[in-house]
Image (cartoon, rainbow, N blue to C red; front, side):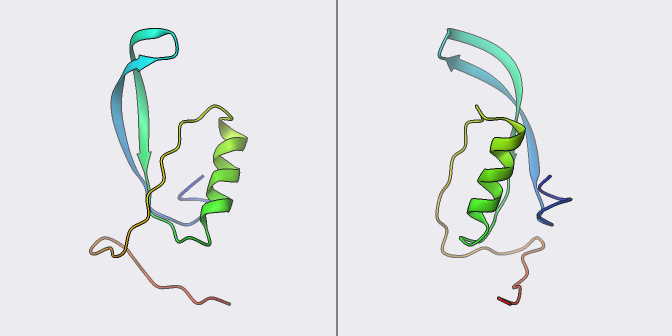
Amino acid sequence: MITDKLRRGATVFEVTQGYGSHGHQHLKVEAIFTVVTRLEVVGLTDEIHKIDPNAFVVMQSISDTKGGLVKKRALH
């Protein structure tokens, strides 16, 4: 969805869940990392909720990015 619908890059990490609401767990899950503009956050979270209403999402503001395929897009 991130690459196809939102046209953004994403990195997928295979991780082991350590502790959840049901105590200690050692479940293999995927963590997805992507960078979006503040204007794209609502669209991203809406799409995530459609796929997995219980997804754990962490957001952090960044002041600058370098490398990769970071491109400025027209506002209109």
